[in-house]
Length: 251
Length: 361
Image 1 (cartoon, rainbow over the protein chains, first blue to last red):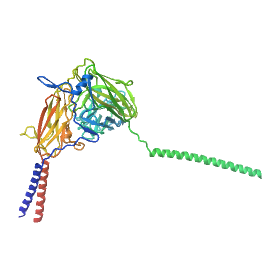
Image 2 (cartoon, rainbow over the protein chains, first blue to last red):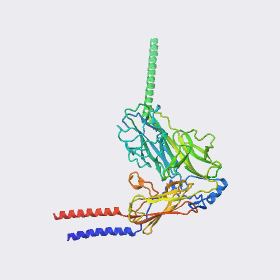
Image 3 (spheres, each protein chain N blue to C red):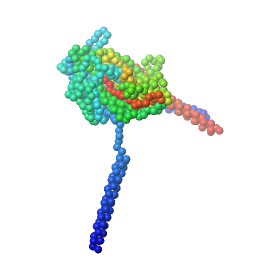
Image 4 (cartoon, one colour):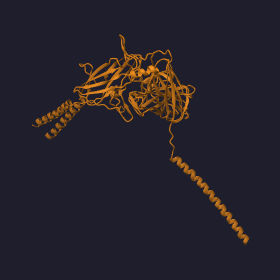
């Protein structure tokens, strides 16, 4: 008897689940998404039609000549200028800030990580999309030309100017590198112990993207930590380098 | 007697005067010490804020597009602001190329191309340093000249304003920062006014999910998953293009949602991941492992999906050019919900069985 009651209860539960599932299936469900509007910006569909008319060949079709208004303007002046991004109207100017442009590493003692930080902030409402790149203008070196090499992290092959790897061994892993944390930073910085070497401008290094975002934003902020570690064999001296941070909107 | 009294009085006066003098001296010394004490106290209590040397730059407009005939010259006024400490700036123009398909750029180190740039300011020149005070604003009058005989085609440049790095005053080892802010300039040179618009869809797909072996071009997702959509468009022409169009989502119950494609530029002979709006936003600060946080996407679909959904896109590259189309699909089922219910039933059965066992005992 008890077994029957128990089975009935299970059946009731299954019936309830089935009813819920059926309701979910019957009721039409829409896919919702966040609307990209705020007091700071408004996304609008860009429609800068500067082309009209056709040309064709066996391999492709092209549109040519400029749109009606633009064409007249082009023919009379010989040029057309469009400033800003037509699909976005924003009151936020494109602005780039570095909180500390003198990242003092102090006295670098052997087998001890010397670190300094700076905050990078970008407002890019009118730009829509942005990137910040960095490159070192030469190695961290003394006036006599003695340099601290770029870090190889803990020896991981994944430690490159575009890929971060753990750097924790202060007694064996020497060099100069950086970590990124905060907003819009690359995914390979998985934590505070992940570092990259800087791309070296003097050795044809390509500046590396350290912040980027495809969406409109204000005061997107990240923290860059530079770190140096030397062995006992490293000559004494004052080491310094210049890091060039370039903030540009997208096209 | 009188004389003695006079002497006594004069001596007394002298003593009083001397006493007054010593009293006044003490008072002055005490006051001086007190003042010093108060000053030290003020300095100790109200410590002035010492902030690191910083820089904040702003440049407007952030982007410029110019279509011009050879032999034409235009003047653009850029507004450069220094919103932090005084600094020495340098303005320069360098060409750039697309770095990837995400809209990022790579600025080349050497100038190239036929376009000529100069500043019309009487006191400023390109590549020559100039001083900017704190909260100073400078108008850079950039002259862009397309010389006669310049070949038709696109030329891409960036106007860069760079600060001079500080001197290392600390005496210790240091990394000194140079801040550079840029504004891109897209120039199309055309004698006749014609531009070439030729593009194709390279990829229209969904990130993540499970591929269903029997159903081609259809993926399986959980109903509550965020579904990232990728739309990659290639410009096969000689001039930059702005694709227009939309992405349409149609469900099994006739529900429809449309997402407009943003008119972002695709440079000549390059690809770009095109953005669509309105897209859901995902906070990746704490959920970095999610597919949408690991890979860039065009559109993020968010909500509770059930059944089969067809996703299609139609893109136009210019008037008179035929639209290009692409489509994909996904099936969404409430796996997580059902798993939760199943787990709840199993737990309920175990609990009921235990109670029964206890009752029997």
